[in-house]
Each structure stands twice: as structure tokens, then as C-alpha cells.
Amino acid sequence: MPEQFILYPNYPNPFNPVTTIRYDLPEDSFVDVTIYDMLGNVVSNLVKTNQSSGYKSIQWNATNNHGEPVSAGVYLYKIQAGDLVDTKKMILLK
Image (cartoon, rainbow, N blue to C red):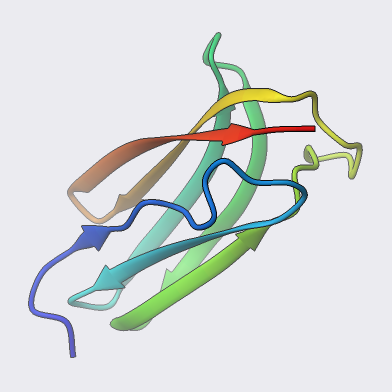
């Protein structure tokens, strides 16, 4: 079991068309993983559910919540798990 909460850099980065986001969850908690554009607009809600502790990963295929492809550019991915919050940057190249 992980001992601490960690959000890892996505891989690959830059990416096209799919990237993987990994995180370690030391305890069971409600997890929210959201992709934002650089203006702070929500692009995609990847995870919004209770998860058990462990080593987790999720893939993003560069689409928005409507299943439409997004433009090349810089995006932020933010995870909230209990009281823990972390944000990292990723680049989509086309």
C-alpha cells in the first residue's frame, strides 16, 4: 500500500493522442480527477468516485466531456482526494 499521496507527471508528455495519469492513494477516499484548459474551464471529468487505497492510473484520450477532440495546447490536470489536492501541467501536440 502507498504510504503517501502522490500525483505523478503524466506519461508521455507531450502526448498525442493518449496520456496516462498515475497517482498513489494511501487511504480510501472520494477522488476527483479533472482536466482544465489554461483559462480554467473544465475540459473533462476523468474520475469522480470513491476509490480504495492503492496505486492508480487513468488514461485521457484528449477529448472533452462530450467526446469531442480538444485542440493542441497546454492543459492542467487536478486531483482532489480527501483533503489532498495537486495539479500538474501536460501538453497535447497534434
